[in-house]
Length: 297
Image 1 (cartoon, rainbow, N blue to C red):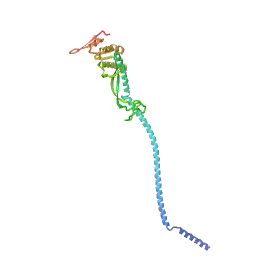
Image 2 (cartoon, rainbow, N blue to C red):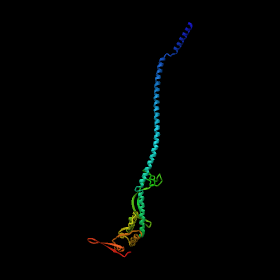
Image 3 (cartoon, rainbow, N blue to C red):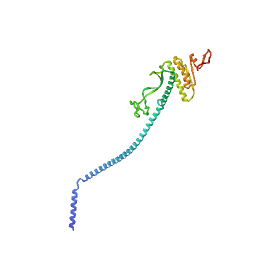
Image 4 (cartoon, rainbow, N blue to C red):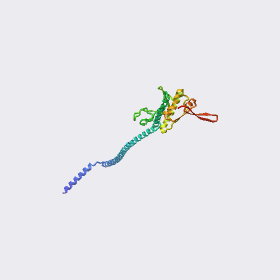
């Protein structure tokens, strides 16, 4: 029994000896090195954990930015639709403003009124036997282009060289300035009023005066039929004098609906040819008036 115990003790001693031999002599230094490596690993781990936290924050920020971008894109689409609507409303407002400006509806109404005057005046000229007709020109083209399309109201870009509307393909017009002129058409030739002869100007002036009076009668719905003509015979030749007299005594009274025509003249021949004549005689201190009745019917 004692020998067995001694053997066991010897065996344990051998194992101890073997274990001690297997332990490196610098194990303490290695333990210190391992502890230092562990500290470094812990530090690196902390850095990685901090990086992970930063990445998580970045991802959260990216998600928020992405959500905000989606909302911004949606709002941008809504704002664009609103902006398009505002642009359309502005374009409509510009067009309405233009149409009710001097170059729009008022200009059209004015042009229409000129055509009406032309028709009436040319009717009177035909009764006078005048060898010409007249027409009005209320506007004169300039070298500048219109800022808006006259058909759809599109606003042209400043400095554009395009002269066709991109919206409705209507040719772009040049601006016009208000400048009333009376053109006389005679034997296919056109000339302006101021270049006509003295007698021609008289005939044209009377025709326009009668035309304006007839238009005023129609527009006001009145039956007022009184007309005053002052010195309309002075520069007329004999033929035109006769035509003017026939216009006054026949056409105006019998055809065009005037009830009274007052003719002012210093010409004795004219005075003697009218049915009822009021003669004014100037004295040194006063004037005298007397009626002179002729046999004219």
